[in-house]
Length: 201
Image 1: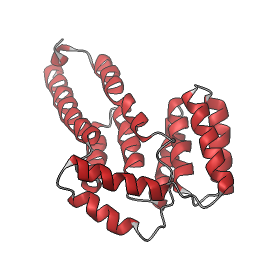
Image 2: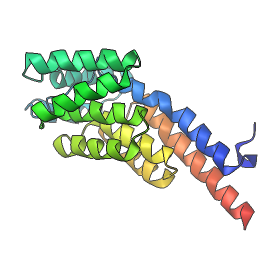
Image 3: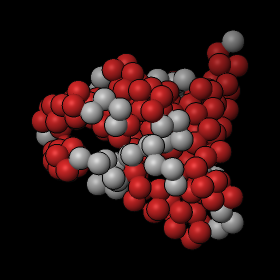
Image 4: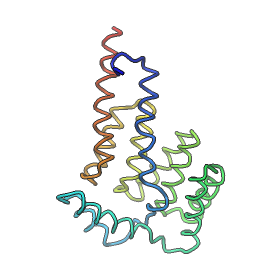
């Protein structure tokens, strides 16, 4: 099927389908964050300079391991419950859990990131973006939150802004295959949208 011949509404649906799976690559079972650990600076430098995917994934694993140390057993347990509820489709329950986490530990970046994630799945996109922004204020290098922000911008057809966000994520994690795939998709969709606009003139 030729994208260039599709109406704009169909392009929007395709954009969403192409990107929606991306958010699951940063699932709560593996991505929780203590953004203040002193080891992270060195690890992010290694991630940026990794020469192959295997090396990058090893560094990513260490970052995730550190991000997983919230410092509070109760918070960790609630994060697990929230992740389970979200995977089972119990979105309201998950939202209540993640909201409670952000209130109890407002400087915990992953609490805000998962709050943003569940709000996105509930189609509360503006609120989700607010929580993503809070995540990035606490941990600007949170490539999962950046990817989520790019996803929401793309869903809103803010394709150029989405591309910029994905490129920011790539600067942090150059060898992440899904981020690179989304950048390629944004370039294609921007080209298609431009072609539709020119054709309508």
